[in-house]
Amino acid sequence: MGFVALLCTVYGLAACSAPTDDAYLRFAQMSFDASDFSQLGAGDVVELRVYRQDDLSGVYTIPPEGTLRFPLIGDVVAAGRSCDMIADDIENRLGAEYFRDPTVTCQVSALNSLRVIVSGQVKQPGRFPYTDSLTVIEAVALAQGLTDSAAADRIIVTRIIDGTATEIVVPLRQILAGRAPNFRLWPNDIVTVPSFRLLP
Image 1 (cartoon, rainbow, N blue to C red):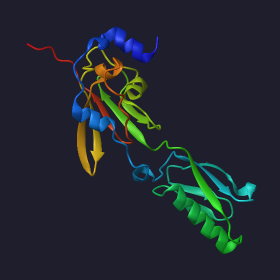
Image 2 (cartoon, rainbow, N blue to C red):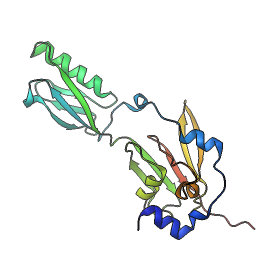
Image 3 (cartoon, rainbow, N blue to C red):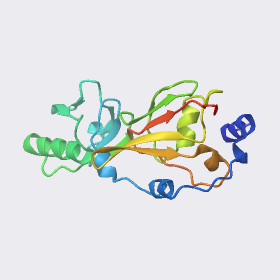
Image 4 (cartoon, rainbow, N blue to C red):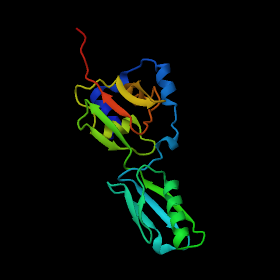
């Protein structure tokens, strides 16, 4: 049984029929500017290629100290830079000492430094790697699903928007019932699953 089907079976999520909040719909349709998250960090993997110089080309993982060891030119600062900035640095240094008008390209293979946090009433809270188009349902699945005490109708996503922390109420019950669009996470989002409270 798939994760979504399991949640629906265990928690009866398909029974929810409340209308979707307009504010949630606005947030669910928002897209982020990838350039805001273009700075690389430790654990990210990049492919660096020097045109017609296969022996200098390869795949590199940025180490914790943030500096790559590149053939001929030695240390190249990678952490805190974009892929294009790394390529330009290597290109300039190779051109200054070794080749005439070299062409260097950089492509990101994996963004392991970008994370989302899942906390609260999930079976395995923690920090998880961000992947393109990661949704709130997938994030809960990464945390091994909800506990019996989870309030699935009121998951909170905390997101930095224009420098301000914003809390977004995500109606997981409605998403799983097909009555609300799935919610795509941004890098560095915090997903909090609160406890279910019985009314007195």
